Length: 586
Image (cartoon, rainbow, N blue to C red; front, top):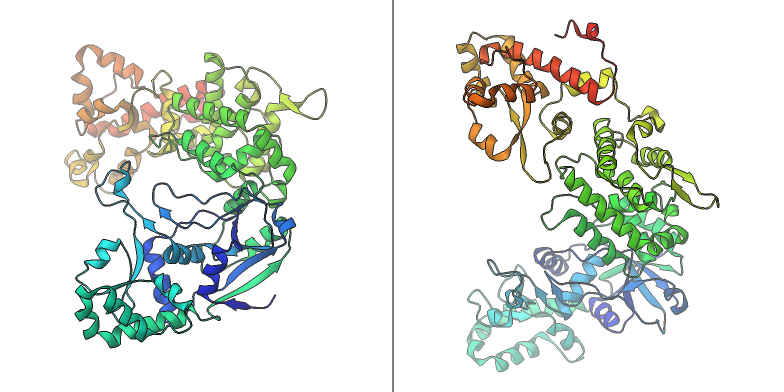
């Protein structure tokens, strides 16, 4: 490949003549107005703007793929590239690298840029005034701005010239800066004095615009001819330019939607629906793409080759079922009390969605078993590292081949975690919990994993209906060195207690409003003030009846509660309890 080049003037003319398009592998336009203005300033200052990469295809080849038109009028709320829904009559160029820069030029020189006015309502159409790119002819630093025509006309800070007009002037072979300034003076007599006074400066900038936009060496590019999409995707991986580099997830998402006409819209809507209007979850394209492969029983290798036409067609053809399974999985996670903070890996939802996708039975008992799967997989952190291999093992534990040998069905239509927990996964990962795990769990500090553990210890809480907080039973604020010294604790013991303060044995789940009331109240006062239900409180929260709740007895409280929690976790996780093993720990 050798460098070629063309002018901005020719580039814009070619886009208007339907010679340039965006392959579906490209992402949305994301540049803000400051970045667009900086691009034009760089052009005027002779700064490099990077090279471009174009994909040249015959009409026949181009018609095999999905393309979008360039965005002309940007709207912060409603912007969307139009899908090409017609056959190409002649060869075209797809922009592989430089989409953001070329889109910026096209919007600035042909369209409008609409963003919401400050404090205006997003639903109000008039909140998005149409603004065009102007340049201040009186500013030697090449000041570009997006302005409404009215704001440009009434500006007190200079004389703003509509930049796109320079392209029209270039169509006139006799155009020069003198003639253009004369035309401006004639068109706008009310501001003629300003231009006359600063004529030399205005001519200088207009002359610069004429030269830069007509410079046929300015847009430098490589051209790739008639390569297939798989080759193009491989090139994408290697491209490293001034733009935003595609991650592997971006690339594979682009591969998927390149073969699927409205795939981008379908996927983005599903992610939005799963996350909910309240933004409870944080599902993304990376999660969704792996999960789609998981659901249609495709290989779990997160590679370009995996997203071939066969697997993409499986996803497209089963999209309605995939969508329902994932929406139902998100709803079930809500019911289980999860949110984006408590769901340490989105992939915990993937085997749940598979069970639903394959028609697994859902009743209260099955839900309890499915929740165990979520909790165990997160506590054991099976999705850390290579998620692909973990997911492959989890799927194999759920399915068997159907009698026809071509498809997979669930091993059991009703989920039983006691059987499933023995599923084998690569890398030594497992779902079963042992004595070592429980000892590690008990040292968890306040966070997503400690919440998982506490939610297991308080199984009857309606986590989907009521907001519960992780509360320090002995309040966090009571562990200041000055307060601990006042009750006879000093030296290294202070650091030890401060470390123990944030661990599970000093944490409970407390209803949000109740936690607000409790705040820094001493534990002994908080419990004793409950009078009639103090005994119930102790039992429910794994506190011995005779246990002192005074701060000076914190270490004894911590040790005894830890032992009670240990016994309960052994019971909940079906681990054989041998009391002698913990004589030193008690």
